[in-house]
Amino acid sequence: METYKVSKEEKIEKNLSEIKSDIDITYYIQDYSDIQDADDVYEIIRDNNGFDAEVIYYSTAISYLTEHDPSLTESLGIAEEFGYTIDNLNSETLASLLKSRHLEDEFEDLRSEINDACNVEDSFFCGCCEIEYDDENEADECCEPTEE
Ligand SMILES: [Zn+2]
Image (cartoon, rainbow, N blue to C red; front, side):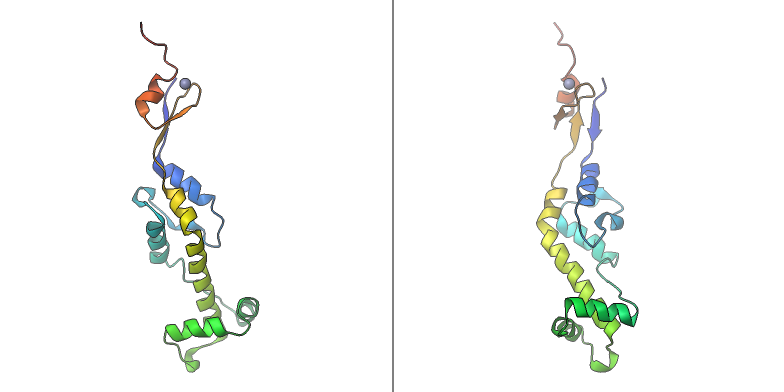
């Protein structure tokens, strides 16, 4: 029976796809061979504008703000950080800023889970009994009859 390999990249993809979050993490990743840890995942999402939420329509913005920041303290604080002034702010901008911040916060909350998801190595499976090995030769020899 043939030994078969499940690569580190395949495992990372599967692990990340199983993490529940508002960001579709695997949507942004093209090449899993570049990924070592959550910092790499963060950079890829950021570089693809994955944290830049855009809330459109006044009514959607108002309901988002009402639900998440009824006093507007948090969203106005973020707007101030980014140098917005009253004359270039509206509810859609505030809601977008707040939602973007929440996506980043969620990522931070998932950071250790994402690190764990990336902390894997290639595995080799005996095609006969499907026992998993770190070493390809061990998997090859698993169900082979021993030579006398
Ligand atoms: Zn075996």
